[in-house]
Image (tube, rainbow, N blue to C red; front, side, top):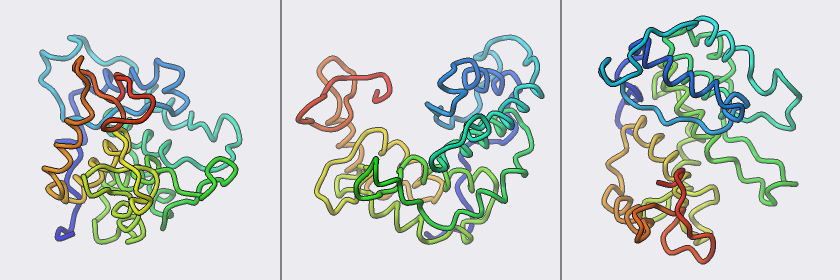
Length: 232
């Protein structure tokens, strides 16, 4: 991988307070997001005059909500979903709050987690959740050298020759998925490997664009090839 530390996901872990509230506010206001669904991509801070134009109220209360409302605290989960911890870490970083209490749990993950076979017959791990492990470690400032190689091998095994990623191994011959590719590219960036298959990935993503300007989940899919804001 060539580097001793992850490439930063954001320019600073302490963003403009109003920007932090803007991001965390959306995280908390939608019930589905509060339940741990639909993470926002990590973006760099923006100038003050481009935000809401008001001070950030109740930052400490927002942080406390994030810390105490992990879905596992609300009901027993069939299996842990590591993406929830990533959402907590990312939201707390946006707020400029301490993320150290989450460190022990996240560093305890040494390999991808086999998914429940009643839902996925092969037991393939959930790609987004496993990428959340890599992104969380980066946000925690853990040296790249300490990342278990099993996660890197897993990431590489999910990349197609055209640069896309999917939940299944590339060896099964299937194409990638736009959302999995979004997750995979974030992980490749923090690993300082984002130049790999760059041209192929760009070409693949452009092939996912429809005539109306929106994007669908893959290039020329056999079914479900409609545009969606999540893909776009």
